[in-house]
Image (cartoon, rainbow, N blue to C red; front, side, top):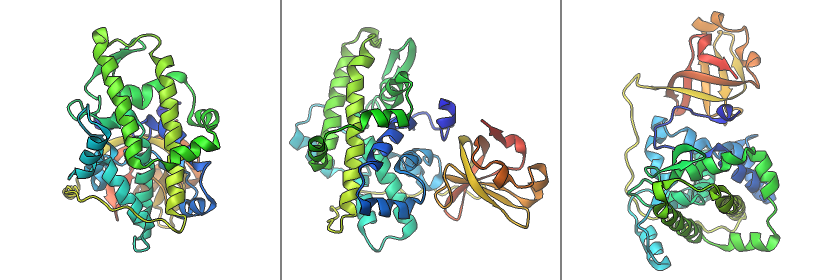
Length: 368
């Protein structure tokens, strides 16, 4: 079950899924329940039938796609420990390289501007959903020297892991509940608390994560052999729960503001952007990706296109079966695979700005 939920199983080692799939989708489910009618309509216009939960993991899934490969810093922000709130705020605002704070401002502006092309707004919304959620994971507002806890090895549940992965997914996975079950249990915040959380600005969200990360670092440093005690889960899951609740509630609040009709976009800090990756002709990375097929189309020429991960036009990528390979597959692959969970192995490449994988043999598609 967990394997089927992983959209990309061949990620670069340190490009770990922030909050993990379950955590991100739980945030998205909670946010969906608190959208205003205007925000809900605007989100539907951009995402179609895909939900906030569906879109919440997209920014992690495209990390290996050349077009988005340089956007890794959008997912986090690195700061030294021991800062006061005023020093923390000054350092965040003064950063000149891309980071999560800047990325949120950028996406807000793109969504609010009437001059932003529709496709660009779709990307901005998907990034905004993900990054707001990331900023509520404590290890995404932490130290540069250990890559947000990625290089701090710990023992948990009798297995080795690292501090970042522990807070991304290990604690959540320990409970064994799905994102739907977690959202049903955790979406119970009082109206007063919702108002309080949504009234806080992004710097406050980040400061909360920074303070939590500071405590987590201190706990690990005090542990012998960095072996987590048996009660670590019970003591820390309330923090995970609250941060996910806050992320969902605040994401909804931010989208409600953007689509309220009287939103004033924030000033975007000046940063130096890295040049987009431009692979040589024919260069593509071989990956294995797992998710559901949402229909597609078989043309009279014999070529078939399958929508992977979401329905068209919000598919995570397109699976292409060319006409010359059609005889190797079922007569109508778009119908045969519709609704099935599959793992695809092949070269991921870009076509007209969209990721795709061309499959030439049925062995590249494994049903789950």
